[in-house]
Length: 112
Length: 110
Image (cartoon, rainbow over all chains, first blue to last red; front, side, top):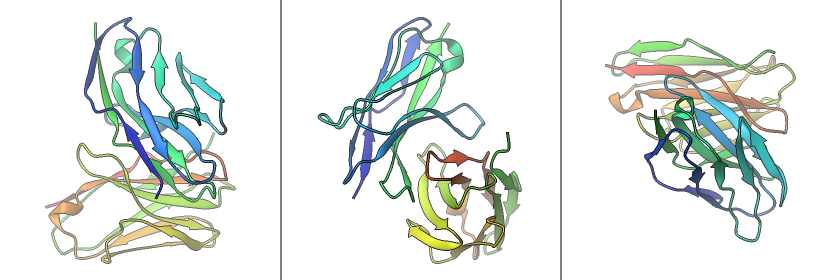
């Protein structure tokens, strides 16, 4: 079945460092890909998305490109802030759109 | 803008009791999903509904049941609660694009 694999955390960075969180997927058909973020004590929020190959999603300085050839959707940010400390979930939505499958989540700590 | 509303936000129940969680989707969204997130875990898909019919089923225990009503709100019924059911339960809705999540109901079973 469809699945999402993302790098294990926690990831600890200093403020203004470069961030990469790897995400790869397996899926039949043509899924949409997402990054969700969960700040402490809050629910899941959509961070960015891409619906087809080579699409780049971006939001709040974060970017991810839908790479069909490598089945990847890595999350990047050029300069992280303390306020980016959260858990980041890579996810895919199956072609029918009836289910979103999440990766295990990667916890990010950003130190001042 | 209207978001997904879940109630209650917090719930404490004793073992073997029953709990009902409610989810009110974004207007005009026809699909509702339920997820369970244990402490330090990723969200696990439980069940989804499309146009009031069950559309997909994940790792939902037999002790749990859910339905979507004519106004598209959904309820997750949980019986014979166990300590391991303590978790954050998320509802999400979609209208064929990305899922929008509610704030979740934190269930604590004591």
